Length: 167
Image (cartoon, rainbow, N blue to C red; front, side, top):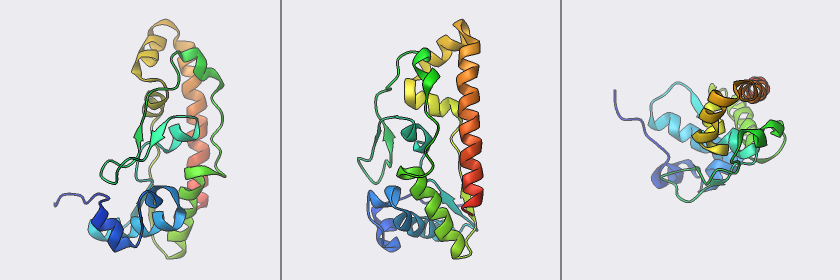
């Protein structure tokens, strides 16, 4: 098996998509997903291209600095587990989540198969607060941590359902 191709300036040029549009706009995402599928000789398109989508939608600081690195997360915005108790529900109608779901629909309309990747709750929490509060919560207040994880699970199920509905 060959090395998996990643999003590069050359791939974006072939796709007719730009940066950061490939991460922000449905049409550019769909074009990039198709180019990536072809470059990897895959039988499906993959979206999103990163593991920051859910965390960004709940307030995480995400930067789009360079094509080669893609979205990167900044400093944690929460310092304590208690601050995560009021995390909002994912807004599936705006921002990158909505654009990614729209890209799924665009690809489905072209009879493409789309693999939609969900980010696990620990990675999601790591972007929001770092690992310190997670492990401290596991040791000192597991009920609170499990409540937060349950909230994230429910949001991931909503996102998965929306992705299925988007094709």
